[in-house]
Length: 403
Image (cartoon, rainbow, N blue to C red; front, side):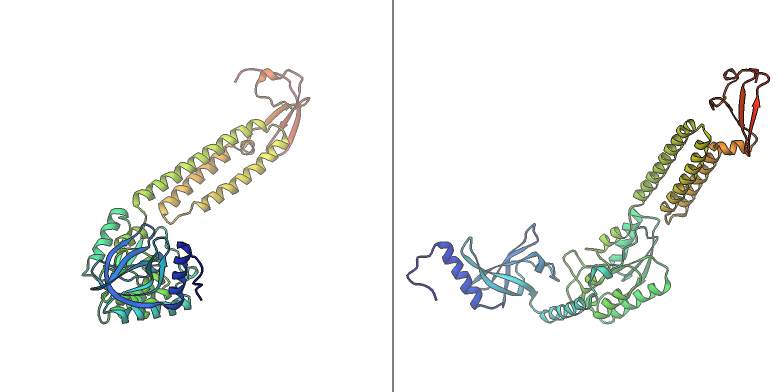
């Protein structure tokens, strides 16, 4: 009950009016003509619904707007489902729309929403079931009409960005009777052949009737069952189809699908060059470390530690090679050549390998000083000689500086 004796503030009165409207008017369908339509940067839609004598301000929040299957335009006859409320700041009533349909195709929208809800409940739209798009595809299959502009756009984009990628077309009708069956057949054929790494399935823009093949349940289930990752590219950016929700990735347009499918060739070359520079720097750093360590290891204990360290570094190099394995055979060959070169260099630096070739390490017996120059020793000095196998103890009989 409204208290007739109470004095209401403007805000209280507006809130009261709003609550009365919202409690007494359930969500309703309203038909009218769109006017003053605009999309805010937030993604919300603002427009008026009008007829010959009245106007109803309407807002559609971004989440609801994302489900639109057409592009609203001023002058378009539409049907909107929404709830009447009051915008308290201005004190004006308005409708919050949750659905918007062009007049004349309401049955298609209802069918779309029913199938979307059922497939969503089955889990076909879940992110955790979607496959990862390959980072470096070499063969891309395209399911679309051979007569349309879509295949030409995709080929043009890929020729410009990634000329090394091969495009294979499986032509299918993309609208009208039999289109859904041909799309399903093309998807299944690509999966059976195993000749591509990725599929793009789509067509250019059109009316909801033109795009309807991509709202068919058979197409949705074929996409969901595909072992190949699929990018859906149906219509324009504002067009949404069931295929978009089921596919592993949705592209706003077919040209955008081609850009998402393969990285630029120049970027690949730069990545390879960057990897080569990184490997070269790592090898140089390792060699500098080995040279420093060689100067520090003079005792027998040091040689043993050095040998252990050498084996650990070989393990790291092997791990590095495994990490660097990419799909490109030529890049793998580069890594293997660099690794082999480094192993040879390490072997040549290994003092034990030098001993194996017949050399020895001579040190003074009294203080283990390594003898590098004849000036370090005198006649009758006791010396130790480390061989590849075993050690000797001797006395110097003669000292000569001649080479």
